[in-house]
Amino acid sequence: MIERSARLAAAVVLALLVPLLIAGKAKAGGELFDGCVDARARPVQSTIDYGLPQLAHAAMENGRAVVRYNPALMPDLPTRARLFFFAHECARVALGQPLGAECSLQQARQADCWALATLQRSGEADASLAADLAAPEIDWAALPGPARTVDLAACAKPAGALRLPDSAPPSVTQSRQNRCVHACGDRLWQCQNRCRDEACRGQCLGHYGSCESACGG
View (cartoon, rainbow, N blue to C red):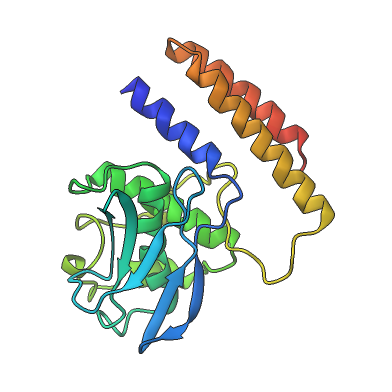
């Protein structure tokens, strides 16, 4: 369990400040959400699949993660809620969750909070999102993860949450901060790889926090 937690923590850090997803123009009668990346910042293919029984679903295909999306399902679901569930599946990839097995309730809630943080940092989350996700007509058979209450209020905002990219290029200051945070993440990865116990990994995270703070924000 400790080894798995360390790998997940490192995966989160390696994905810092990398765009998780963008809402593309309507294609083939529905939105195509693109820009998902895995924990190593490798592009994850997203594709429309009208035969998919779920709104969005991440799976391994030919050794690579793929996120499929069915825009024909739940047409009355608001766009932000659709973004949330697509971000949920991208989060499962970025967090290194096993895609060949059924998502557990704990894994689903972890991905929910990651998806929320993504939308918050992107300005895509508003007060109506929680209500949209709690609507009585929500059909969990067509949505990612087990049937559950999406408790957005219980999500603690993770440090360095991903954000959607702005249309304008990053400023010199932003680029410098991004390089700084990535360097901190690299050092955390190397530090945790040398650790043999949880206390050591905790020290690595402490050093990372100090390093990230020094980058500014």
